[in-house]
Figure 1: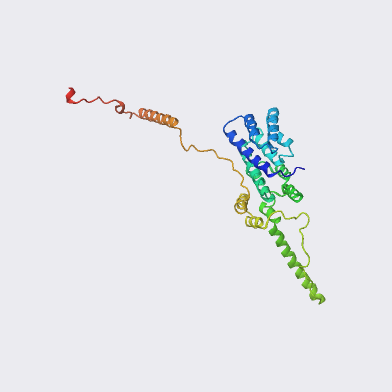
Figure 2: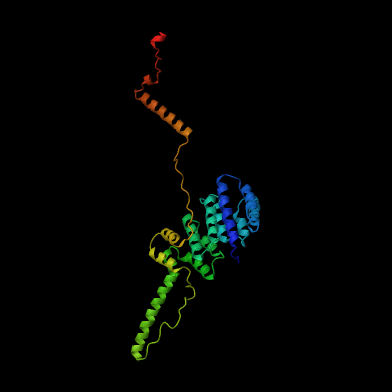
Length: 309
């Protein structure tokens, strides 16, 4: 089972994915980018060797995700899955967006990452880009940041999504929900104890003397604050829940696909050609309607002063 990497590895990964994306936008060859980055990356980390393997795999198979999958002790299954979706033929999920997702994930891991924050980020990445929940959730569950309770819950989600509100699923496994269940259980036990006391005439026992623990399969995965946010977003679009968690708890934001840019500024040469074309169309319309006046196109004869007469 892969383990979490050192902080310096995630810092270099974030730099690698960011620089890779920026140079792809400059239309540089992928092989040249990987070769240059292999020299740039910190030699005390394992990433330069990993990049060399990715470059070799790219030469043989034409894709990178297979190399990431072969290095399962270094790259996570989610990283390989995201790159696979981008490298599929005919995919609408482009490389730039995939690399930006991996950059932000690595950047978050280089800090004091929470399993809850990482899960919400990865899940939103699946939802926003329609990458598929079946294989996507399996890939998420393979991340070493998640303990066994997390892995079991993530795999259960596949059967619950679409039938149970996502905010409710999150709330149910939060500290807030656990506290509310404890209060309800204590109140119920108190009522039952009072009822038995009245019947027997004995002193009531202390119902708070025993400590309550979360039952197996109901371990707390999200904080009390996350539970409050989830409860407040019951029945709403899950995207509102994700945005609230990012604002309130500092969860990482998922990059969004860039829309087609409008032509805010037309190229001067193109603008000149369009102007000429518009003038020609105006002349053709005037000629067809019999309103063409050629006088405005005739040059006026030059006027000379009397001193030159």
